[in-house]
Length: 213
Image 1 (cartoon, helix red, strand yellow):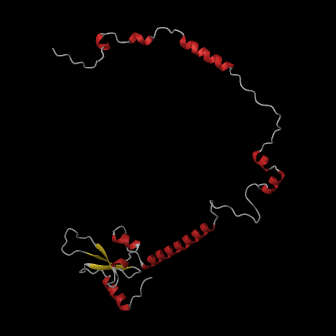
Image 2 (cartoon, rainbow, N blue to C red):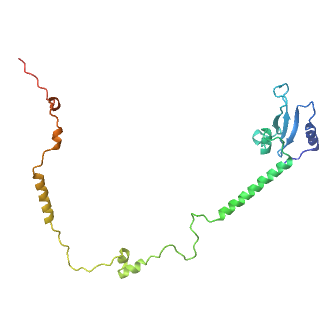
Image 3 (cartoon, rainbow, N blue to C red):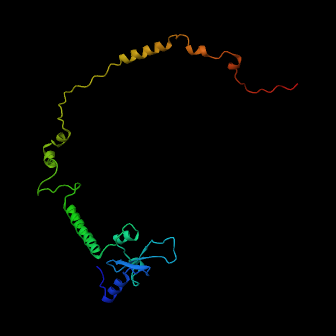
């Protein structure tokens, strides 16, 4: 909210905003925090003739870290906006920001009220999840607990034993393999490519010193 302005200060602002021919600095406007915005020309700068520079001046009692420039005045200071914002426009922008904060808080409250997908759904009183398990004590009492868990019914012992496998086939196969191994095989085809020259068959020998004469 804009701080109250005394009649004397208001008259001084109006006087400084008049664009008189001999002036090099004019008041353009002010924001809701009490900062004033000016246009001026540098004296003796011929290269910048006709170009107005823009600056913001804040009250002397305000600390540097407490200076806040509205976005609309930021655009004007950087020459991205030609006309300065009015007081009514700045007040409407502040009201819009407050309204957005309220709507965002309401949206967050609605989202928090919805049930999360990762949380289990609420159950009715007495309702249980999954299939009910049989009573362990009752099954053990009638002797059918282990049978139900395994899903098998014990068979009667008929007194029959498994017959031992016949090992005669294995012995015959082993003898046949021995006979095939002892048979004389044909010529080895790899011997045809064996080295035959003297240099290829030479192998180094251990050193033997010659006896003294």
